[in-house]
Figure (cartoon, rainbow, N blue to C red):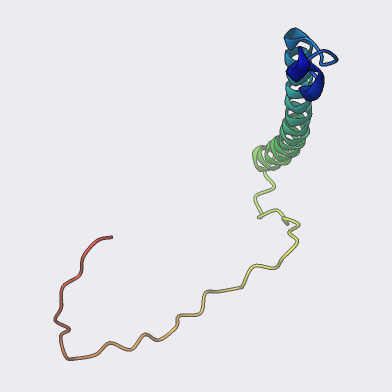
Length: 101
């Protein structure tokens, strides 16, 4: 009895209430995580819907005889042609042991 008063056993919540609070916190975290995932999947679905629309328009234009490459709006410009970088190769063979990590 004395230890119960010192450590607060007499005024503490029952075990099922503490467990219920933990379950409530877990449920709220799961709700938050699923909301975040839903926003991600919604934006992905919107992106793919826009892509499908673009591809359908391109196919429709091709079927109508408009056979030029469509202008694709990008946030960055593609290089007109790839620039080959020169790579120096040593004539002397390299000896050694190569081990996989």
